[in-house]
Image (cartoon, rainbow, N blue to C red; front, side, top):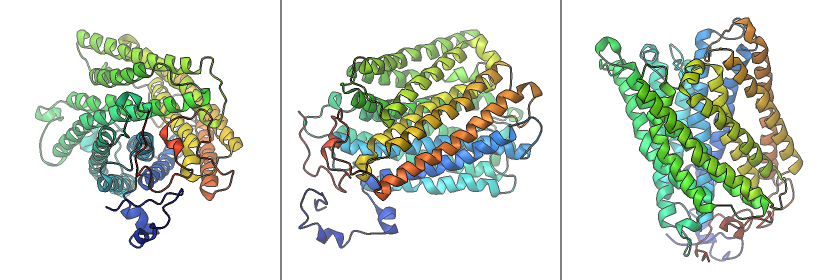
Amino acid sequence: MSSISHDHAGHHGHGHDEHAHHPSGIMRWITTTNHKDIGTMYLWFSFAMFIVGGVMALTIRAELFQPGLQVVHPEFFNQMTSLHGLIMVFGAIMPAAVGFANWMVPLMIGAPDMAFARMNNWSFWLLPPAAIMLVSSLFVPGGAVSAGWTMYPPLTVQNGMGMDLAIFAIHIMGASSIMGSINIITTILNLRAPGMTLMKMPLFCWTWLITAYLLIAVMPVLAGAVTMLLTDRHFGTSFFNAAGGGDPVLFQHIFWFFGHPEVYIIIMPAFGLVSEIIPVYSRKPLFGYASMVYAVAGIAILSFIVWAHHMFTVGMPTAGQLFYMYATMLIAVPTGVKVFNWLATMWRGSITFETPMLFALGFLFMFTLGGFTGLVLAIVPVDIQLHDTYYVVAHFHYVMVAGSLFAFFGAVYHWIPKWTGTMYDEKIGRWHFWLSLVFFNVAFFPMHFAGLAGMPRRIPDYATQFTDWNMLSSIGAFGFGLSQLVFLYAVLKCIRGDGAKAPAKPWEGATTLEWTVPSPAPYHTFETPPVVK
């Protein structure tokens, strides 16, 4: 492979002979092996899925605006709750995190590209067919999966063809995740610039390295669980069918053995992004770097021994309940270390509140709140009361949306000058932040109260005493959904080049390698690796 640079800084002379076989237009995107192109496709795909999943969420909230059956049939409502979960987890949040990894990890470690460039292309192009399968399952006889995103049997055995499509889609997305993870691990371990030891890497690379190991560990477990569902449905096995001697609780164990590490797979890249943002706008190095690395590793290890806190109500022995309760509480320690380190980074720093910093602070505040409600749910007697109520819905949306999504928004504003060469509009960015923050809390904070009062989740109708909380939640959800159009506008403005030209280093406090290349980042970077002191 000839090492020819399309660098803006020079080498224009011999850039042309490569252009001859450099596809353009649509083929550029289909055949690309460039990490920046693939990162961009991941991020756009994730945003499209975020919109699709968001429309489903708004369908749910429109139905729940008032008691009684309002907008959709109960069966369709169940399909919406199930697909909304699956699409948001596997179609929106995970691809977004991989998109950031693709774009930023090579730039941060001074690598010319990802280690396996063709596999990188392949791991992206598996996603659109899987997403199409998930969404098209709405149109097959019997409709989409309606057993919740957790796909618990025996409901899943009774679902129609939509269930098979969902199982197939999950397999494909799982394969994509595993390939992406192998690629990220290999890139980080083998392609770092001279002088960049593991303990000098930006924290985002660390969080992704550990996340990738988690993915490789748990994705096959999910694949096993859904394959057993498939054979129960079509091949007469009884893994989870009590009538044939199986056990539906077994599925829950296998599913949550994947499902709880999955929560950390979703949140850890967000931790990494926030750890990149806060030092830059505090103009201080990250406080306690080594302890942050160990905390992430600690969270990853502990994530394997807490899964059964999702199952306190299935009749496990008290000793089991106690073990999982204490193990769950233990995870609060490394998470607390991270929160304190972020606060210590800001302490006496010269902070400015640009949009990325606002989102990082929003993340910090609300993720901590979501973490606290997680500790409440870890207490067995409390959980038995609150299990499957809206309190749980509130808890995980504070972690998933206010955690991951806010960190992602912050990261987009932080790096979009580097991606597009144009500064984003600060005013629009602030509008996006404040609208998102306010409406998010209007949508999800009332759910705590509805849950404490005993409102069950996944129901299309409810008792009249919950009306006020639900009306508030629905108004907040529609407000939050619409405020994402502001984000889209801000991003499109940058892509069009409508704004100030971005310098190579737009942020005063930025120190990592990606700020040493011109903005927009050249198509090929670091063909001669930078030397890290």
